[in-house]
Amino acid sequence: MKVCPRCGMELSDDAEVCGKCNTRLPEIVPPPMPTPVVKSMSKKIIAIIAIVVVAVVVIALVSYVVMRQGGGAGIFGEKDSDGDGHPDGEDAFPNDSSEWKDSDNDGHGDNSDAFPNNPSEWKDSDSDGVGDNADAFPNDSSETKDSDNDGVGDNADAFPNDATETKDSDNDGVGDNSDAFPTNPNEQYDSDNDGVGNNADAFPYDSTQWADRDGDGYGDNPSGNNPDAFPDDPTEWKDSDSDGIGDNDDIYDSGNGGIKVYITSYQGDGSSDESGAPDPYFNISIYAYEGGGWKLIGGKTSSVYTNQDAIDYPLTLTIDVDDDIPYVYVSISATDDDFWSSDDTIDLNGTSTSIYSAHCYFYPATSSYSSFSDDGRLDLADEMDGYIVWYCQVVEM
Image (cartoon, rainbow, N blue to C red; front, side, top):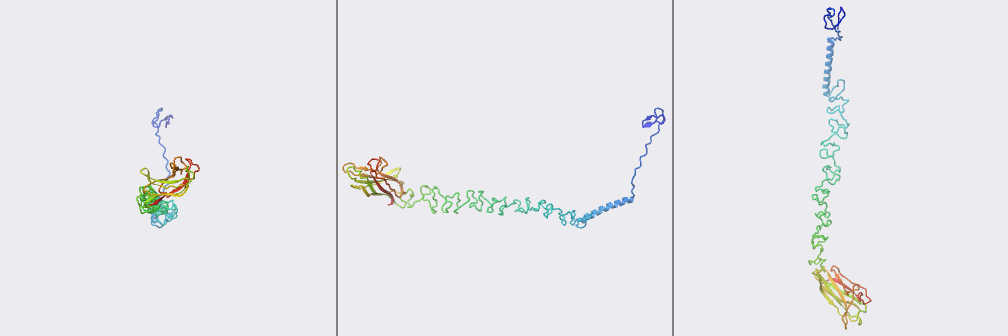
């Protein structure tokens, strides 16, 4: 802002004449800028500084080169024997330029240590992530462990906890070493070493037999133990007389057989004859079961034993019977001979009111049969008039 020197009127900075008194205004001259204080430096000082800087750089470069070549000291006198840029005091491997740190203190530098934080491991030859010290197979990346120490890794070992087994070719759960049939999943053992597995062997503990087609317990091998002469007939297995008829159906196993029936004794009650002492006689009848029914194949009647009430061996009958007859029926009757009237039946069976004879169904495999009964005291239909002792046997004809 300008001020008129004459009238004192305030005017703008760019006014040249006072608008009040027309006085020409003087120009405003700005005050001079202050002179800055500069520390002057001589050219000599600047040159000295430049020389020092260059010297430091040169010394640093020389020191670095010396250290890289394995000798000398650093800028501040620190030694780096292997020249790897790490002073010996900080270098875990001062004479190995490829290593300078050992994080796990296992003696192996971090640069070459596959497990820098594990003091028990430093190498992994097969790169499987398991250190060589713990790796049972350090050169096999597919295996790391062998639990049973059998030389086969757990990954490939079908039985990793069984040192006696490593493989199960048929996947039956039994190792090949103990599996008698390593390629057959249905068999594992052959107890009798006959070449037939126990599962399929009808006789797993008999090396001479293994099959039993009819399931009767006798082996089909004719030259083995207890051979089955009839391998397709479960009711027969032996033919002692080689007649083509099994012993079970054969009435006589040692050749041609027959039936022998004999009464060893008779004892009457002394009152079976109303007209006096009894006069007994006896009859034996033998029937064979064939063709679905009973057929009479033999019979015999004794003589009359006059006035006798106790008799030894009153009658014997022996007849030939076909070997394949399965059943024989024997009937023995006693009769009192009456001269003046019809003969009377002597009751030998006190358990029935209609059957008076002694009888049995005789199966040929039984060697003998006997019948004993008490003497009946009353002559009633359900009481016995006498009793007999008799036998039936298979005999050779």
